[in-house]
Image (tube, rainbow, N blue to C red; front, side, top):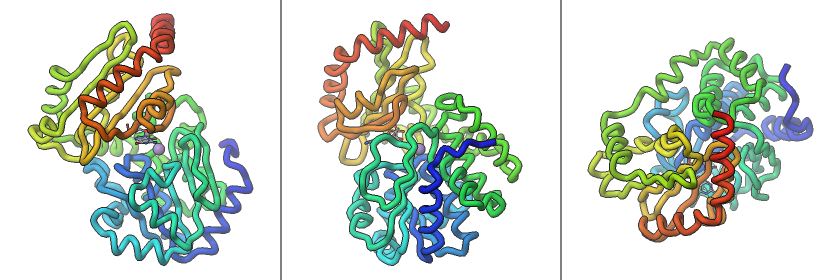
Length: 351
Ligand code: 5GP
Ligand code: MN
């Protein structure tokens, strides 16, 4: 039995919005990850079965390791097909905003969505949802937006209509947002849902291989360089910092997705409870933060970099140099010393 976590009224409102719409657009966040693509394509597969005219639009490209996903060839990348995407948004009766909380998270597409005539339904699991949507289905306690899409489809009464392709997309989002069920994954119902997805024909082992055993040799050379040359450890506060410049990325033929998961690596080191990965990106410096236990990376991120995210996984952007960004990071650490030390202590007690 799966608990009815999502409010019945929100389910009915979402259903009504879908039934009333013919042209539906689905959008998700910049640098879409497995949950962004998974939840969007799952909903896309479902709405196609409902005979809707559906367009999925992502602000920018998505990593190669997701390029097997059913329906991914039909995704419009805003950065590449702006005119076509603008037209689809202008003609939409309904826009689904998935896996992000504020329009800032979808880049320049944000103003286009804000100006659109369409009704908007937000389905998301980040804290602090912005007030831009007509229907706000926001559940920060959920491990993934993909799980929310599963729950919504079922609660609307369409479990039978859920295709194997839709189930594969949901599974992928659930898997990637929990690090293959290694964090945020103690909710027993998650495994009831996985069981239902497997009954739909999902081959979970194959999906794992497609997502995680699909990297280039260059990625591992870059990882080797990163760990041997650019990993700084602050042992007394259980913190690790990884950095990469664009010159280093270029040297190792960086392709989108190559640095995926790097930020998690230091958490495998005994005594490390907080890990940061700071890398030069197009026109900015990108910060990724991860933690073990209850250290609030999202608070750190919003206080220091104006970013946000979840307790254990968050990020931000910086518009000063990499060196300056690192200095900002290091300058902020003393303020969090007590929390970090308490977290290390907890880890030792559990060992
Ligand atoms: P990642 O480190 O994988 O890029 O991001 C992890 C999580 O942090 C994302 O799911 C998202 O919730 C959040 N996040 C990443 N970058 C940003 C950002 O620039 N601003 C905000 N508000 N959240 C971010
Ligand atoms: Mn997500």
